[in-house]
Length: 298
Image (cartoon, rainbow, N blue to C red):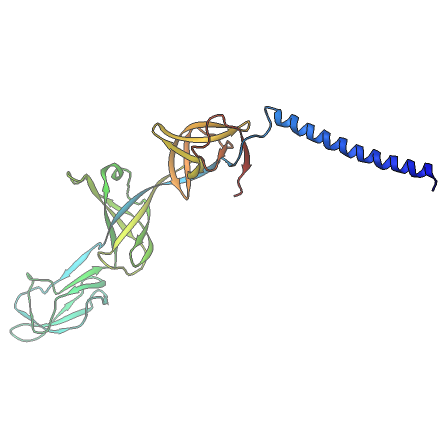
């Protein structure tokens, strides 16, 4: 290759280098121009999400004790009888008509004490040789039909929201969770405490401990609307606010909150479905601050 060929090749390489430099300068100029644009992303990056539709259960919580719905006392029909034999103990399951104890009258013979209902023996005072009477302490106490109630106290403001047959989910200490439903609501409240009784029938065949503590969650309705995470809500002396991003700037929206569940809160007023909300609202962000929104992953 001659000198002229080498020169032409060098010029071509130089031209390509100059073209690359020009392209880089153009890109830098465009970036600077975009940064000066009022619509350009500025400020801190913030995690955002869209307000969505959700449904919340409206519930009332009731704490109380597990009690026998019907406790049947078993006594002999006449006085002057002596216990000769005891056939069951507390905790035994019995059927209606089952023999519980054998008694002897003064004149001799035998009288059998039988279970008037099926159920579980809650307590027994029968001891061999002791006297039994129709007026004294019951020989046996039976949890009739093995039916339990959770009997709890409810503030008067909540009592009026309860109604017969409303479903309940009950957590009982030592027994886990069981289903139930409202059986009866007291028509009065205690004047000093302003608490009233609610009787929740426990369904199922689980064997429970009488006087065990339980807590029931009763569903009284449902509300559906816009929802955001609890972390998106700020509380101030004037109420609650949510920080929304519009045109890459912070807007503070005063909202009315409702029910809460699973880390979400119902927004009854102040937001619309699809609004872009700061996922973790904070005092460092103020009205009008420029931000770079980054959509949070679900």
